Image 1: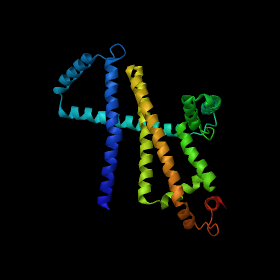
Image 2: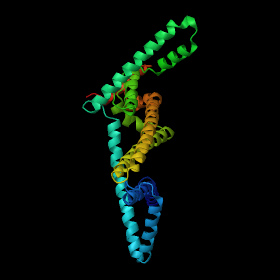
Image 3: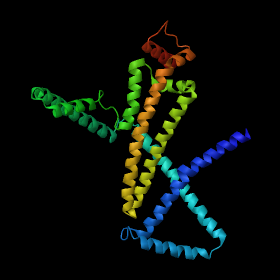
Image 4: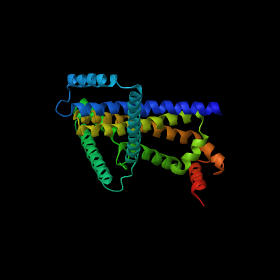
Length: 296
């Protein structure tokens, strides 16, 4: 048991060092650069180098305890910044998964639906033009029409963000295919998954959490724009990267969840004792599981 606890503690420490402290130290260094250079000398490398040399000379004559205190203060500040990034990452996850029932997210959802209708209208016009020019042999126009038609989505947007749409679409597909309420069924299904699939889902979830945490760092870097305007560019680039990663990992996570339902719904029904007659259809099986979990 002591060896297990030691191994777990080591992994936690390594994760804390990699995801929090190192990223926090980089942010602290950027903060010092922002304070020193400011808006007037945003890219004055010589000014920064002179300041670093002066600081090093001033610290050279100090005691080792003072240096250790400075290092400890920097690590504490980096840890605090890391905790702030974690909290902001959680806020981003709630934002990405929001339903959009109230403003301002309801306005975003309304805009997405309006954009979807405009794309559909353009698609219909492109298909109509391709049909009208079919006899003229306009291959380019017909190819454009086919490409536009493929991009049309079946469902109207139901969430303010594309990330939330990915998770919601899985629940809708599972409900339509199996009549299964995924929310109460998933914790039970998770307990039955094989180690390989569970590891894949865990890895995808960790990647999604990492993308959200990166978005939190983007906001922290953006706040430094008050002192140093290039930080706004850095924050924007980091946020764009984080959103792109979050979309990819959300799609992967949603696919893995749907895969788990496809492969192990029968096992869940058997373990719950949710009988649905002999040779039940997928819909009957999912409905029986839902009634078993949500019924009185």
